[in-house]
Image 1 (cartoon, rainbow, N blue to C red):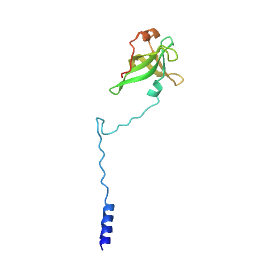
Image 2 (cartoon, one colour; image 1 turned 90 degrees about the vertical axis):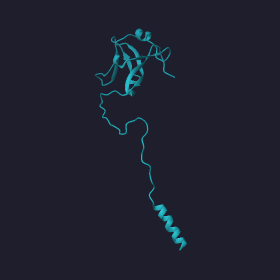
Image 3 (cartoon, helix red, strand yellow; image 1 turned 45 degrees about the vertical axis):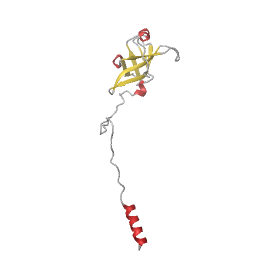
Length: 130
């Protein structure tokens, strides 16, 4: 009789549902995700990084090496200018409005800027924060 009561009590404990904690979000992120659609005309950072920039004379004047993002918007493009094969290059930060990025007739991304190599070399150097 004791064994029967012990087995019945054990089965009752095993059969009780496990109480799960409810999902709790923390931080300042919105509670609900909002989804977007992306068209082929939109630029991706992976395509932007490493893109050569040419000027009005079709000279290569630099390369986009990074993006600075502030308040969910691109605040600056970090350009690698000067140098050869990684030697002597330096970085400058420019406004995204000063660089035109578009698809050319071959469906490839191109970046143009109305400036010269010398103007970029003379621009204030950008240094990554530590």
